[in-house]
Length: 134
Image (cartoon, rainbow, N blue to C red; front, side, top):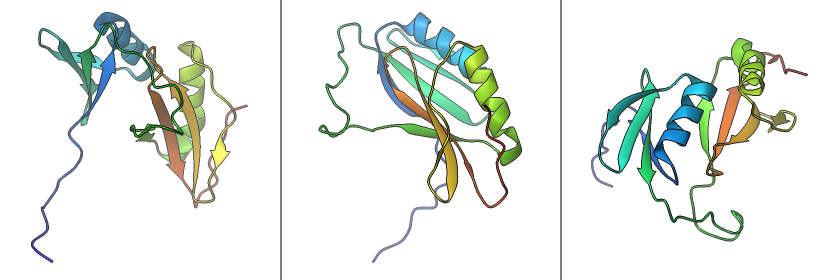
């Protein structure tokens, strides 16, 4: 079967955005991310060991239906169970809307979209009962 690569984590994910500043501002307001580096058409934002590459694509259009095209459907950020309700309140306070928390049977999740409609999940795993904001 071959030798396994010894991965140590996920360094970053990259997304296409129509406006670097609007996206950087949204990630700062929603998650407290800072601009870590600016290249001509790409900015890296993040904090701690979580980073997002914002790739400037001013003429990009969103796929018509995430269920019918091959794309990364969403990216999930993990929070501890006791922080799940607080994350929901913080996202609402930052002007984001989302539906009620979903229970997959192993985790609670909410979904928000950034200014370019990239879908982001905030999730926390069971077994402890996760407080869900109302």
